[in-house]
Length: 197
Image 1 (spheres, helix red, strand yellow):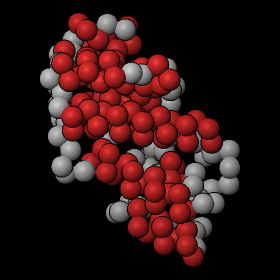
Image 2 (image 1 turned 90 degrees about the vertical axis):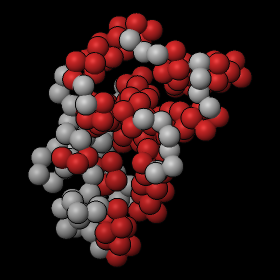
Image 3 (image 1 turned 60 degrees about the horizontal axis):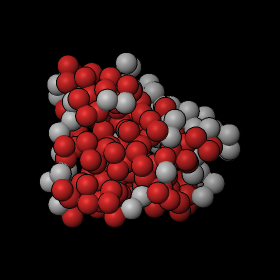
């Protein structure tokens, strides 16, 4: 499951069991991402709260499909298959247009996003790429490009937080060798099924 010791829900006790109960919802098992925190359950709480606020907070204004695409793109650039599979599925689910989803992903892989995205979406994705791959080179110009393309300040903050948090998740997952969780105890339909291209 990972390169460090982890515990299933059934194996958990004490503080770990309490944290698992807080985050697993109606699922029978805790996602592998969270199980990777088994030895430091307090970090699991912070990771879960970050995820929920950055991606699912009700006051966020970016369309859900775009938020998922930004997250998936950051994970893709980090080489994090776990997050690409999970959030690529969510991007497709929320976009609810399989043909357009295929066009977007093909353009992303080919480095031709300008062919399929609006100016605003493109500026957000370019910012995501630069912040992920060359963070020290990000400047006010990159933020201004999003603003010029029509993004408001709140949307810019959302893009920043999505990108930064999925860089964090990619490094947790890749850095501990966390395997994709699938099957009856893993990803549930409401979470988005694993994305098979």
